[in-house]
Structures are given as structure tokens and as C-alpha cells.
Image (cartoon, rainbow, N blue to C red):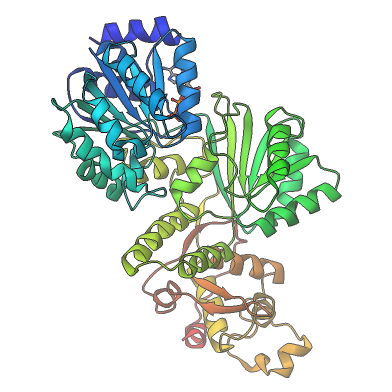
Length: 524
Ligand code: ADP
């Protein structure tokens, strides 16, 4: 059976072979199993049902949520010589009737329908005569309220399946793989003894990295200078960030364009085209940019902010390297991003349960920024692929910095922050630890603290760097008021108590360790 499928693939679609994930899904469908296929955007989901559709008797119904995408797909199929058509709200009754009659006569192999049609009685009456052997539900996560684009009309699908004289085989396809969504798809679509395949999340050509504590603007300028000939996207969290970054880069002579929902429709269309046709290399955008955009030669995706969860991150980052060429996905992590995302969650009027869910996903995103493990492996495991190996090429796999035990330094810093009553910023804390005679230090009598001068062998800048790292790792928090103030985070207490150690990839100058009982007293 699979041989036949490969023949169809080559003859109509012009591809030599199935991708690994496609093969499993197609095989399962041809063996007559309901199949739930989870594959990232760009993984090639359409082939998974289009090829079996050619091999089944009768007509395949494809339920798809976006009219524009539906039209594109139908056009492509027709151009390949596959009889297909679509039924959506843009057609009048007569047209719907004619197309369904043709389908009943077997004149189409694939019939794309918008889910809203399922609710129409006229449609229900007409579809009864169509011999349906296979139903493919595209973007199946739309059936789940946990998913990001819930469509109530997707809930009609199960009833539709039940109403058919013979239950067809069902394929559900999506790029969203969280367990809640998977479970919902299974339940709401009433899948029967289904096979689940989660595949293809690893993308060998993406070089993932997370950078912490960078001066983000400087980093981007340097990066753009070094990659001037390459096309890339820079994602920022808010329209304001996009505008500011755009203005800054433009002022400095970089050729950039921008995209967010606050721009006029013409402006958006114009900027998008400029980017798609390589008139401008760099697109600065909010997450409003990218849906349905298939630009193959995007060489880098830089995130100026940490997104709200890994689904969002990987979808955006995954717009790099569609052509399979090596491409970079860089996330510039700042601890403030956690506050921004927390604020977004709190601001939405969400049910308690939903809120918790969003937080859980946010924490996984934060962990991604902090983990010393392989980033590629971290992501594919998050999406449910269990047998992933370390990629050997991401920022973490190639980071040769040795792990250093910085517990003692961390304890000194935490202790100092605490003794300064968590009311001052990183600069002053560093000065106190350095033993500076700065006016502010003496004015507040910080030179009388037991932690004063406790890190005098370090440069002030080195202490600030350490503090930044401890912030990024969640040991310290910065509260944003008029002046940023350092506070101890939850992870700091066990370290202060000596219950946990702080081990980080960081180069610190070897410091003479002295057996110092007094020191221990001072830190308590
Ligand atoms: P998805 O719907 O999962 O986002 P698509 O079905 O649009 O992905 O496919 C993504 C890209 O991969 C398309 O450009 C498609 O032509 C290509 N593609 C899909 N399957 C194969 C294959 N077996 N061999 C080569 N290219 C493929």
C-alpha cells in the first residue's frame, strides 16, 4: 500500500519520498486507523491526507478553518491534476448544490469545507448523497478550548461524522501538541482507537541559542552588520518595542521594515511585500507577522523578548530556514520579560484554571531560557517526542564554558541585598560588596554592614555581571519602579541557608578561598 502512496507522491506531487513523519501517518491511515498527526508548521501536513485521499474510494472531506488557505490548496491540487473543490460561505446555495452534486457523482477527489458549513441544514441534506470514505480535519486544535484558536463550529464535526451512513476514517492534524489539546481533539472528534504520531519537531538546520544579559540593541546592530546580506525577522513583544527598535535601527542606517497590528492595512501589505521580495532584508515585527507566510530563505529569527510560551516561540523561530539551509534562532532573554508575560496573563480576564495553565506554559518557556541542556532536545521533548538526542549544535551543546560553582559569591550577594533591606539596585549593591567609599554608600552607613567589602577582590563590573546572571536565573528579582530595586527571589533562600548550590556556566576569576569562620558569621 505504501508503494502506491509513494507512486502518487511522485506522480502528482513531484516529491521523491515521504518525510519520516509523513510516512508513519500515511501508513496508519491506509491501514484504516483513525490517526492523530502532530507535526510542526511546515512539516508537510497536507501531504498526509492528500495522498491517502487519492487512494481511497469516494470523496475525501477536508475540514479547514481559513478560506484563503483552503483556496490556495485547492488551486495547487487542481494545477497538479487532482480534482478538488471547496465549499465555504462565499458560495450561494446554487453553487453549493452544484458542487455537492458533482461530488456525489465522484467528480471530485477532495472536497474542502469550512466548519461553519456543517451547521447548515441545506448542506447536511445535500452531503448525504456524497460517498465519503475519509475525513481530514486540518488545524484540529481549533476544536479545543485549550488551543489558541478555538472555533466553536469545530464542535459540530463529531455530530457530522455520526450523521454519515458509514463512519469514515478520520485524520486529525495539527501543530499544537500539548497533552490537553491532544486529549481534547481525541474526545471532541470522537476518534476511534486512534494512532497518535508526534513527529518532525526537530529541525536540524535551526541553530538555537539563548543569550542572557546582552545589551540587546547593540547585539542586534552587530548581528545585522555581520549578516547584512541575509533575510531575517526580529520579533518584539509589543508595538511600542517594534516602533522603537525600528526607529533606532533606521536612524543608524540599517535597512529595515516593520509590521504590527497598529499599522494601516496598506502599510502592512507594503512592508510585508518588501520583505517577501527581498527589497528589505530585515523585518521587525510583533507576533502579528508570519501567519501563512512562506518565505523560504529567512536566515535568522531573533527574539528581542521572550514569548509567552514555547508553542509561540517555536512557531515564530521556525519561520527561519524553511529551505533547509542552516539558520539561526536567537532568543535575547531579559528577566523583565518574565514580568511582561506575567502582566499579560494577569491582564486577561481568564478563569483561574486557564490562568494556571498559561503560567505552566510560561514556566516551561522560562526554563528553556535557563536550561544548560540541549535546546533542540528540550523543545522536541516539550512537544512530546520522547526519543530525541542532543543536537550537538545549539548554543548549549556548543558552549564550552565549564560549569563553575558560584555558591559563595551568590551567598555574599544575597546576604548583601538582604542587609540593604531589598531597597536598592544592582549598582549600589555592587559598590557595597566592592567596599566603595562612594557618598551614597557612606550616607546610608552601608560601610558598616558586615557584607561591606566582602567581594573587594572583584571589579565592580564583575559583581554587576554576577548579579545580572543571578537575576536571569531567577535567584534575584528586579522590581520595576522609578528605579529598579533588587529583591531576593524564591530560589535564593535555600542557597543562603546552604541547602542548595549555584552552578552556572560562567567564567569567573579564580579567587583565593580562605578558611574564614568570620565570613560565615557575616553571611548569616
Ligand atoms: P504544513 O501544512 O505542515 O505547514 P505544508 O503541507 O504546507 O506544511 O508543507 C510545507 C512545505 O514542505 C511545502 O513547501 C511542501 O511543498 C513541502 N513538502 C511537504 N512534503 C514534502 C516531501 N515529502 N518532500 C519534499 N517537500 C515536501
